[in-house]
Length: 210
Figure 1 (cartoon, rainbow, N blue to C red):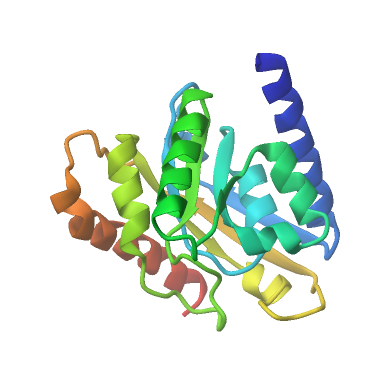
Figure 2 (figure 1 turned 90 degrees about the vertical axis):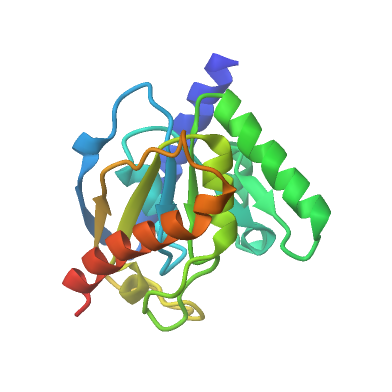
């Protein structure tokens, strides 16, 4: 129901705010003017740290739902927040059944009025660099027919590098780029869309991380 969705969104935003206070981590967001109210989007972001999740909940000015690998459900505090938020769990070892569950989860989020966000690299960067984007994210984006919005994140790797047990005070930047229409795209356009989104994020990423 609408009431439950609003309650869930309130809890997600509260959790995200508290999580960002921990190091603490400040952040700057640009490009929010690209996002229209009451429009659903398919956001595609690079991925540097587990702090990307609460950061993007705060930075993106429309309700979003993530695809999260099942391992994240083992992280204390994260697991509870993911369940409350209705995050779409991915089991990459489950083969065809995983794809079915993902498709159902994306469809359910879309029906509930949420935008979708996917980390295009598929996993966090272990070295803080930008890595190749996976085809599956772009196949999914085209199948939804939603406008694709590239998002560039920098600064979170320094706050919580993968594998580290420590948080560090820091500052992150989020750039929300202009939407790319996908309504007329087909499966044949996956590589073209992937290249376009990668080039946009790559250029912005290296302005902050030369």
